[in-house]
Length: 368
Ligand SMILES: *Cc1c(COP(=O)(O)O)cnc(C)c1O
Image 1 (spheres, rainbow, N blue to C red):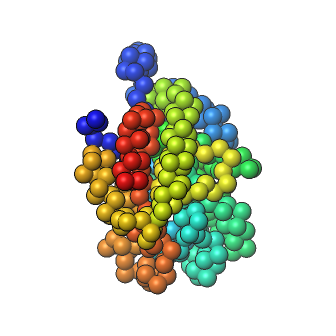
Image 2 (cartoon, rainbow, N blue to C red; image 1 turned 90 degrees about the vertical axis):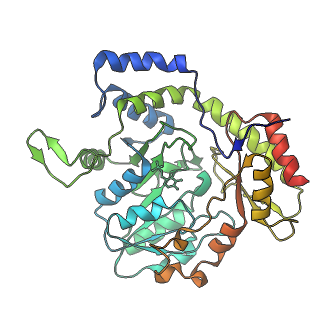
Image 3 (cartoon, rainbow, N blue to C red; image 1 turned 180 degrees about the vertical axis):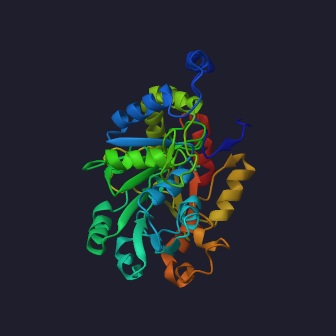
């Protein structure tokens, strides 16, 4: 019998004694923040691991999203998805930008490129898609539209750490991509995030903006924010990076077992990959359809009664929250696919330390 509660995710925690030497270094140098040695090391190590040109570390992904929009001086209207964590749209409001929501694809639950063009107005300056669950958006179709209408593309890539498509890292698409290293994400630094960018000059502007707009002791060139990652978070990131491959392998094994075991269950659909070559198995979403004996919330409750805390990512849709719901693009008639997905989705527990017995228990409850 398993009595402990099982959550949708649990951070991979290396043994504490492995973190001590990192802490000793911080105590020796007394450099706690402001782009210190661990900050520099982690930026370099992540560029190598993720195979991207430039990375700027942040205190969290939300401030990174706000800063990404500032970096490219985005104003007016930005086209985005309602099917995401609320921080995606909040980053627009923090910049005085009007979000314009378009519907998602039923297959990937990512923004539907065929719905973007009709949402463009003279005020539109950018598109902010989300690689939901780490499955890549249709990056080519999105870039084509952006090129025709001269729009910037900022990806909320909070779920897409380490994901590769046919043409390399998914983080190489668009103008900027934003990663989250929050405790609940595949790779975590307790709290943290990053902007990935292709250009050294833009990286310099991002670095200035995350440090109050300071460029030298006597010069401040922009109304920047404090978005810096501290040394302790960066040091933890260096330690986490050692274990990331093993963690991803364990996630993959869990993903495989779920797919095998749930494939024949009437009314349960496992979301398919979007064709990524290297996935990160960051989430395991299922869609609970009408042929299943319980509704999604019924299954959610049944799992909870057994100590298993699945999550309804993403329900409610961003467009249901009071600061968004009166926007014309938040109308239900505009978002039928997203509404259906939000009512059917359930993300099942997936993390490296999930035990086989726990996984069996979850599967049995769903099959029962
Ligand atoms: C987690 C998440 C964020 C916010 O990340 P933080 O690092 O917690 O600020 C933004 N967008 C999406 C899609 C997320 O899942």
